[in-house]
Image (cartoon, rainbow, N blue to C red; front, side):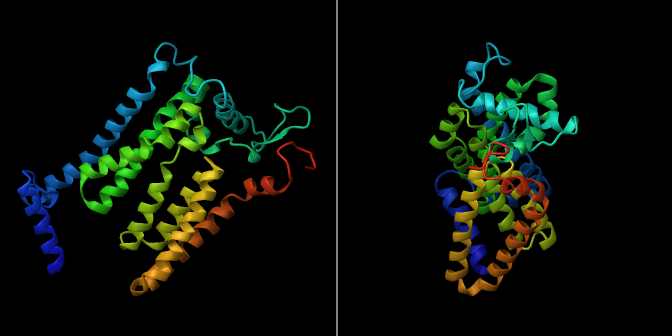
Length: 297
């Protein structure tokens, strides 16, 4: 306890030397009630800021005709617009959403082998059905970097307790060269990366004992299902490197190895739960070797 207190004092002292005050000093002055209100306001304010940045960077070409012009040109966006329309249409008409004969007729097409973004299609279904797929696609593209930046802001603020550095960290993540490139290329699936920092934040919150194991497994399983429904590539990449990172922590941090092993077991349980939920999807993934229905290769 003495080290923590000394660390807080040193941070407050260093802030005073440079003409600013640390968050620890502010909290001690304004009181716990007002501090909680400030806490509640900072995160929404950060989201509004990131949304304004997204609008300033990307919304210009859409102002003249938001329902007729899309981000990303004419390459991949039409595919995503079609998928945004297909998933709610299939469910409303009780069709098999994984197989469609609307394209590649009469044999049909297996959408589990395509970047069909079912998670985003279902989330944006009310907007797609009311305003059309072009506007829905543009809104999702504008939201993607803002939500990515905001999720990283939440993670970094949790780690540091400081809002300003977390704001910059969120900006670097959400408006990186990778993210901007995916936006201008029209890759909705690859631009939607907000779940990755949230998954790390969830692991940290469980590690700190702030949520129970059942809530952790259920929440992480939901994130895994949603991420696979956004981008299989990002899902596979996050799984691979996340597994490596967790393995290294278990090997290196011997003093808390038991805690890390419990975290690893919780993550494994979440993957198993997600696998059960995804059985219909996985069936069509492995039922055939090609995206074309009935094809052998």
